[in-house]
Length: 572
Image (cartoon, rainbow, N blue to C red):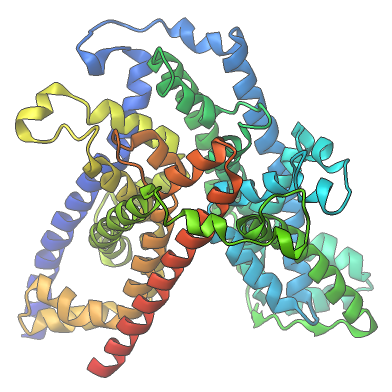
């Protein structure tokens, strides 16, 4: 009897999972694949999204090597991304190996700083560096370091800033790889007379190579698609990159969709190459051995050099955290940058200006919170669907779903925004009420696309800990599919649901790229308001708005987490 029921259950499960798989595929196609394909189609068939049917001149793709601005944007992006990848991966990898090998004071502060840099929006970090390194910035006026502006506002200086902002991606990749180690291999090599350096070079380094490659791919993708740094430094130093030139092509007169399409094509091409490298690294990331036993890696005491290492770590944190975040905080309470640390220069007037007359900040905060809340809730539904398919189903195309979810993480917001303009600005959609360009709904769709990879990564890890047998047992009792999800799976991953929703909410609020490309007329959001004030050189207002707006978002996240987790404990 049980065997007969088991035979009937599998086809039923397969039908439900196939429908869920096709639904998840359709949603990911609408949110990610079709807008991305639209950017490529615009190059091949220019004007097709505006009613013009003509074959594009593919020689336009080669114009990037002829037109000065296009060529300079490509060169700057490649130089910045490659250099940051090299130095960021090296820095992150070394810090991860030091942190995993030795135990020293302030080591946990390094982990905290890494997550702060990872979560903080890049344009806010860049603004802090600009206020520190400008001609009238903190370095020159307060510390007398007149050489800092010349150091930072050049290609090598921007590489330094990006390296100190992007190294956490490589740090986390290598740190995760060093949590476990196969000690028998090192011990065998030492028994054969190998020195410590040779053991590291011949055994440990090859085992860590996939983690370094994966971290390098992440650093490259995040750097080459970064919109925050060029947007922040544009008022002081001209350094066109592919993302910023794509933005200016759409939001300057005349609008240059041909330029936006070509530059987006090359940006997607470069990111695709980086993703192929990452997939290659992940494929080579397993090393299995007969009788090989992995043990948890425990940092060892560093001995007499502990205080030296702790002091170096504090100095490093003062640079990577103190300059970008401290710069925003100081500027928000300084009357002027040049007056220094004096009582007469301390003021709350910048915060007062947030409440006096200029109410666009509060309107922008309200709009950003509304858009992010809708994106977090709707994105959570899509993310749970995708995670279920990846974890439990036998859907034949689930590998493609995994790729789609990763693509949305890798594709820069400016490229996704351009694709959304092409797709949702069609006249034939107007009778259906789906001509979304110029409406707040398009911001929600783009935010959902950005939230899906974050939610999916969190939920896949949580669902992997829930045995499939629990769902199968409920199916044997005749429980419908949706009830199995609602009554069994979701309660077991309640904590991950909350974490995923809050992470998606927080990341959506400060998404400058998508908001800058897609915000409707007279619909200013929080990141656009802050960036506009910064472009107008109103540093005090921009810094106060950053601290105030960021504080509100953090407070909301902490309160929601406290209330919902407490409610969850009471119900259990």
